[in-house]
Image (cartoon, rainbow, N blue to C red):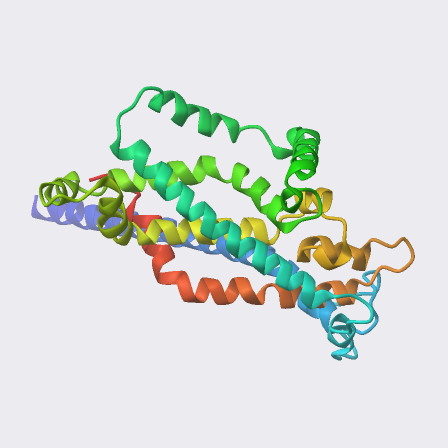
Length: 306
């Protein structure tokens, strides 16, 4: 009897050990599969970057014979890039930076005002306005290209500095397309700010504008930084609208100007194009480095409503 019980216990222990090893093997395979997928995604994302860096230092200036590691790396492509006699690259870079910065600042101001109104005030048409703002974003700008061109053309007849081939007109068009998602972002973030702060300020005699400027805006800096950064990236690399509305070479933005490097049928300069792509990423990297803490706070703080 004792012998049978002992054998039963040993069998039970062996079975438990086999199950434990099976679970460990399953967890190991699961972790291995997740790491494999992760590394495949990382390599897939990094390959174009490595290829562009390689092409930027390859003097052959050809994509057909491009190798991952150039045979004779040099700075020839960068020398050609900064040659003002061939193309005004620095002017294009300045134009992109100027348009993106001014537009992003204006979008932050307008979306802060609109988001505060939709969050705190109750007025007729509020719900319809919120739905209309987000529905308009469903239609791509390509569908409105002709209408946008004609509107800017007619506006330029009466207000020349807002017409075609002007940065002010381009910024105005960008403003119209940036309100939808950004207003919802700021509105949802303002909803997480306790109303008791505003009520206390009202008891002290503060006006709605003073409450917004001195109480709400300082608390909402993270989401405003997020709006600024996302808008800056979108405008900095935007091509279609800038290509349609700008014609003068010295007014082109960086994205439109870079097309000239690969636009010719028999004179494509892929090396110079890659070098320009690397240089043009520097402002975005600097901006991200300066705002990274606020970006993390803005993207996570408003995720859960209090």
